[in-house]
Length: 323
Ligand SMILES: Nc1nc2c(c(=O)[nH]1)N[C@H]1C(S)=C(S)[C@@H](COP(=O)(O)O)O[C@H]1N2
Ligand SMILES: [Mo]
Image (cartoon, rainbow, N blue to C red; front, side):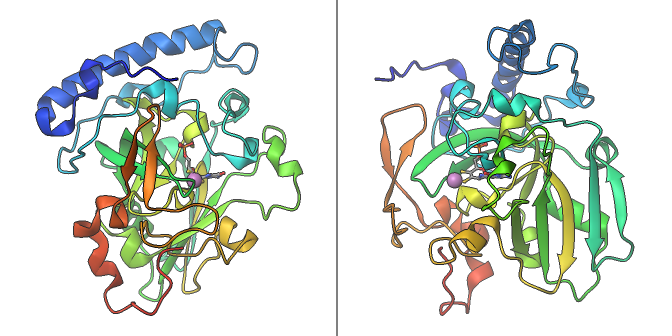
């Protein structure tokens, strides 16, 4: 049984001023840095990577300033859970892929912006990250497997990348693609999966203020297992929409077919908006287990983000918005 130890930085957000939260975040970052030294020393992910010599070239950017607008009503998930309980099928179909994922090569890393844009471009990830307005946001995350976490992401609004890309007026969707690294990703040998992992959003969703590209987590560069160096975060949608390790953004007038939709369209759809009233064939969505605790809490429509996103779906009552 997990014993819940309450730490300073786990205070419910409503009792902490944004400033206090930011200070706590800094302390957390220090703790994490100490943890990375441990990691480099080989105790956690021994012999798995060149972590000892790897220094993330964006490490100097963190922690970034908290944007306190996005309030949460839960304690933050302890890093040890969010960093070791993962879904990243390229590395395996179980939750314990964190160690294997240390092999992912995250530099050099080039991002392709193509399709219906003024000018297609390849941009180096460090150039891109440094051109973007970085901030920290505390968001809930709800996996369709009925577990949830609450974490501090660092990154930038997806809308800023859309501005940067200069899409043509005919573009209606963004299709996003995960890197393919045959040498480091053992899951790719399972050739019945439709690699690469793909996800998509409408332009209205992509430019909604909640849509975020994470470049950091817990006040440090985002860990490989969580989707370094760029990972989509759409907190009102089920977790499978939040595609990891992005290398390509394609602007298109065709609705993209996501990885899971391609595998099992009857279970996973394009919209995937969190809805406690619509069950997945294998999981009721009414409740969720809070990662790192034994707590089960009711799931909220749009994962509690309806004020920001419900308008996106007005007039679409006949669409299957929730799977
Ligand atoms: N490329 C890729 N992205 C992915 C996945 C994956 O298997 N591959 N899993 C998704 C699912 S189902 C979830 S719940 C989240 C998990 O993110 P976390 O490991 O950071 O908690 O990543 C999403 N993004
Ligand atoms: Mo998930």
